[in-house]
Image (cartoon, rainbow, N blue to C red):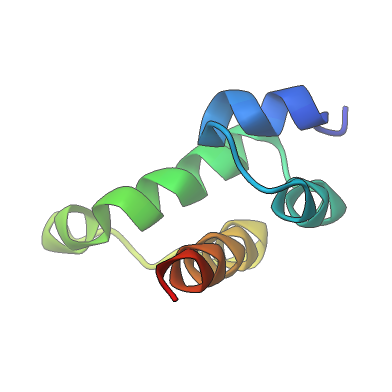
Length: 74
């Protein structure tokens, strides 16, 4: 079942509508988005635990989320 805008906002909190649409367009699941969000928030801890870097849709979501963070910082 595809994610809805509400699903994305539940996981990420209030975010730009464009980001919501981009996330939904990946076809990712809620679990994949939650994993990507965890990576963006805690990448040093995950790397320290020896976790493999994300791949597939999770990696695409990490790219979207980090690009959004960089855009907001500007």
